[in-house]
Image 1: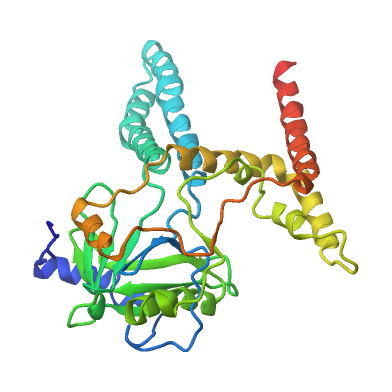
Image 2 (image 1 turned 135 degrees about the horizontal axis):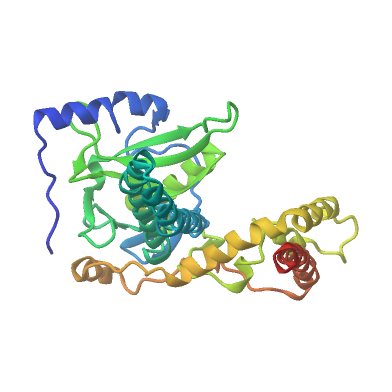
Length: 369
């Protein structure tokens, strides 16, 4: 199998990366905290829920959590593309046709400069964002081979990046949004560092593997790392069972899930005395009735994006390695994270979607008049 070698950078490129991405300043801003060695337990119970795609006796395949906002970013990219090309194809020609007869040469030069410097580059940028999000890959997968002590990181159309498990440094990364001084999102990274403690690069790609999705709970993020660590060090027989596993394709219920509010209706058992959660469901219903019209287009965009995206396909050599452990399957006893609609959810779906379409009809009436 062809493996990608780490390219050696010149002195100037190394200085730039130290001062910028993944150098000392970047690690301070991102709040990196070391978790010791990959051979050392963190003391946290392992948890593989919503982390694993497939596994067998020798190989574990998980996601990097790169699909959290899939479709939503692409929808914003599509909106930006339409706005930029509207400026190029409608506004600019009108401005030019007005400037030439009146001999407003300043306006003409400004319009042409704006087209070349602003509208065209931004239009291509937004178009790239849209195409990448809607027609890229469902997830950036990671594969762990406990026999060969290797990690492979999927990076799209080029060859996967190969990492040596025993040389990786696990760190807990915290990111605090600019508009918040309280909430810090946590994730665990496996980082390949050089002798000076800076991140190595494979071409333009940093040799960093992110495990699962970010979380507000640091222990939850570490528990996912501990699941991977124990698989590599002890084997699958020592791992606890998973409640859910990941799938690459979405289902229709994901369109009307409304950021998880539909799960409240699913989890309530009205036949059980003293059942709690009714007040939360009332609040969720009011929220979705008022703002569901804004949520529904993004959910639909995410559904379409997952359907249009390609499922990552590993090179034959890496797939052959996985066959040593048998057929790759979802974790035994785990259920899919993609749930189907049940009868008690239907009234809430009809109520929330109906309110959303009533708002759309109200907006449409303004254009029909």
